[in-house]
Image (cartoon, rainbow, N blue to C red):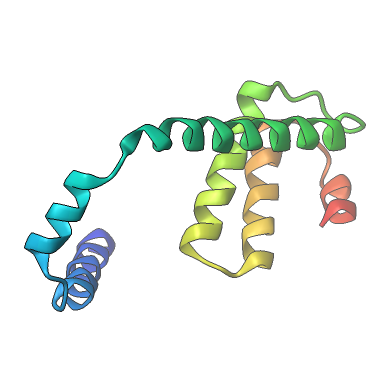
Length: 114
């Protein structure tokens, strides 16, 4: 039921967002875009996420040894939550809970970091 409501809202807002867009002109612009620039952009973005993951690993090193393969998806989910919901404090709490469930870190550490 919740997914159906989410899908319905997505369709409604897509229709509202695209109703005044000249679709043939939009398609023509997409044909003229130089997509080569997407590759360095994606590489730089992933590199930035990796550096942030290493930073979180250093922060957590006193409480729990979490591998980068565990922290990276948690960090990406945190950024996805930030993109969808701009409430930063709720996002930080969700990220803390995600890392805590993936590691054996103590809750007192999270209270100090938050």
